[in-house]
Image (cartoon, rainbow, N blue to C red):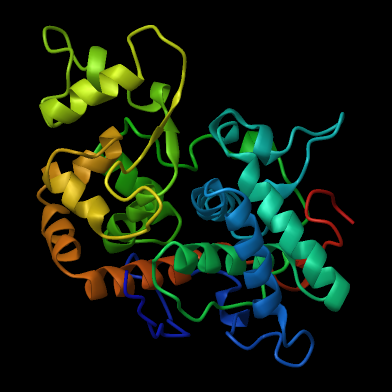
Length: 326
């Protein structure tokens, strides 16, 4: 797949929803130019090593960034381990499915960065860089990433419920979740393409196969051939197995995701909603038909996601290890 370098605007005053993103003004692409000039190369090398070890590195790392930013902002709080006195974000029910490969990737990258630049680069920034590199290494766009986040000082499982989109929510509910985080409908459509890589548990979509509604067990928006295939992977009452989210190009983060939606091949209910809802279908068609449009939309949305709830000043610090507070 031909790669494209996408120029992303470094600063925006406000997002389309009109909600400000506190701390975002402190971010800049050359934040570590004088204090850790090789940080991007160091992180990229660590991600490449982890990708060679397992392809699951890609989807797991991207998903980890999303889950971090949507709960208390992009502050690395999802990386914290629970203790006897505190159940951390990563152990909330909505985060139980986060794969270990994402955490290992960030830990490896942080260790390499610490060896070169001790106490300089936050875990939140390492996660942001690792996510950008995972995107590029899987065939997606490479783009400048804004840096300068601090690591959060708290992490609680109780802060997670209601903050993340769910696969069985309505379009209005999904848009409300994104709007609450200062993101808009275009961001929602673009960021959903992260489902082009990675896996999903049967329990996240089996209702579309067996329990859609009384008298109609299968979701009618699901391609019948695809539905039969999924039934072989997820038998009714069977184990909660993992299924590739994109059967066509499972290792590529690309706009095949949107073409799948056009063919009734969205795995999650929230995926297929993008094509069945008139508010988002035109955007799906545009991104399905143009790789360059997809690259730009996805890169822009990732940058805007990275501005959500950024910590600065006394709100955070730089952790020595990403899984424990200093």
